[in-house]
Structure formats: structure tokens, C-alpha cells
Amino acid sequence: MTEDAPELRASDADRERVAEVLREAVAEGRLDMEEFGERLDATYQARTYGELAPITRDLPAAARTDSAPRVSMAKEPAPNGSWAGRITGGEGSSTWAVAVMSGFQRKGRWTVPRRFTSFAFWGGGEIDLREANFAAGEVEINCIAIMGGMQVIVPPGVEVVVRGIGVMGGFDHREEGVPGDPGAPRVIVTGFAFWGGVGVERKLPRAERQRLKEERRQEKLERKQSTRQLGESVRDEVYGAHREMLDGHHDLMRERRQERREDREERRDGRERRREGRGEREGRDGRRNREY
Image 1: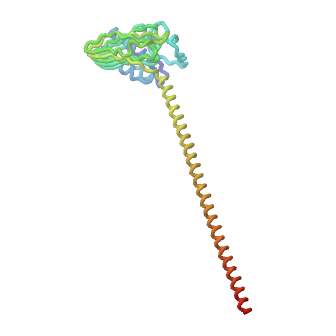
Image 2: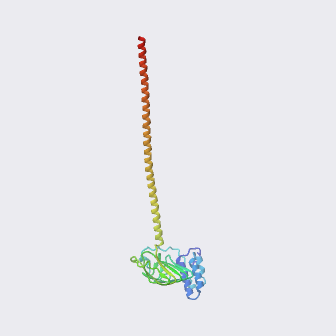
Image 3: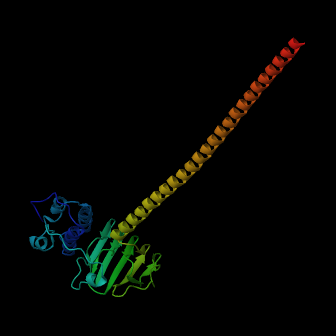
């Protein structure tokens, strides 16, 4: 355990190594089942190295030295995503899990052994293989659920075979028969369920889900932008048509005013001409009368 950095966050692999120490201790009789369950719960609830350290402090130093978590300041390279790079050979990082009136989780980046055994009594467990490596091209997940339940999560591309037996319980066969990708591992789910169940579901890895979520968000933004641009274009067209209609109306009103003005001027000119004509006639009549 790293005593000089207790505030650093612990990983799933760190918690798993502490849990392995506890399993060895209960198998040797150093812990009873009640204390084992309490410490196991504390292990999977721990968030930092400082919370993990007291859990195995009173257990043999040799076991702690071999299995206790240590801080690595060097970032491990991320897997390249190909199945060949995820089938590593060797031993698994965890070979079994127990939940007695409690729960357990195996998730994140861990190595699935050739045979992984899990037991749940009045409890439950989650075995998540989406980001895991595999010790062999074919691995067996043995699940024993007594009045409890377990969930096996596999990524797309993995072939699943279910061979478990259920008594007043059952195993989920929905993912069975889906062909696997070339080079992908084969997962065989076996075991026994009594008044309990073992579920098998296929989910995308978190990184892939996040990528698809980001793509959907980007598509949504693009659709919004396209809709906004279309709305602005339609608005501009409607505004332009409205302006043309108003301009045409104004031109028509100006023409009509000009026509009325010209009519008034013509009528005024006609009245003036008639007045001038009457004046000329009256003048001629006056001259004619004087001559008589």
C-alpha cells in the first residue's frame, strides 16, 4: 500500500487485489464470513488508497506485499481496440468473487481468467467484460446464485454460450446464438441458480457510448443550425416579398396621386380658359353695343 499518498484515487484493479487478500484470509480461517463480508463491502466502497489501507493491515505481511495495490505514476497504454490485443494469455487478475448478503463488481480494465467462479447468496454481482482483457480465446464464467442474482455484461462482437441450470430460477439465453467477430473471445456462462437468476446482456463500452452520444449531439446541433438557417432564409424571402409588395403599393399610390394632380390641373386650366373665353365674348358684345 502506498502510505505516502493516501489521498490518491484507487482503481478497480486496486480494490480487486485487496479483495483477493480477503478471500485468501477467509480460506485460511483468519476471517469468519461475517467479517469477510464487512471488509469486502468496505473494499468495494473505498475510493482512495487511504480507505483501502486499514482493510488488510492486520493480515499477513507476505500476502499484503504480493497483493496490495501500489501507485503507478506511469500511464498504461490504452488497448488498441483489436481483439488480438485483448487476448493476453497468462493468468487472470481475479479468479473468483463472493457476495453473501452483499454485492460485488468486476468491471473496468481487468483480465478475465480461463475460468472465473462467482457465488451470490442473498446478494448480487456484476461481471462486466466490456473493457476487460482475456487470458484465453475461450473463457468460462461460472455463476452460482442462491436466492440472489448476477449480471454478465459482454461487449458487441463476443460470442456467448449459456449452459447454466436453474431451479426455481433461470439463466438468460437472449444473447446466445449471436455470431462473434473474427478473433473475438468466446464466453461460456455456466453454473446453477436456485431461487435466483443470471442475466446476460450485450452493451457498448462506455467510450463507444460516449462517442455515439457526442455524434448524436453534434448531429442535433447541425440540425438546429440548418433549421435556423432555413428559418432565416424563409424569413428573408418573406420579408423581401413583403417589401416588394409595399414598394409596389407605394408606387401605385404615387401614380394615382400624380394622375389626380394632373386631372385637377387640367380642370383648372379648363376653367381658366372658359373664363377667358367669356371675358372675350363680353368685351366684343360691349364694343358691338357701343357701335350701335
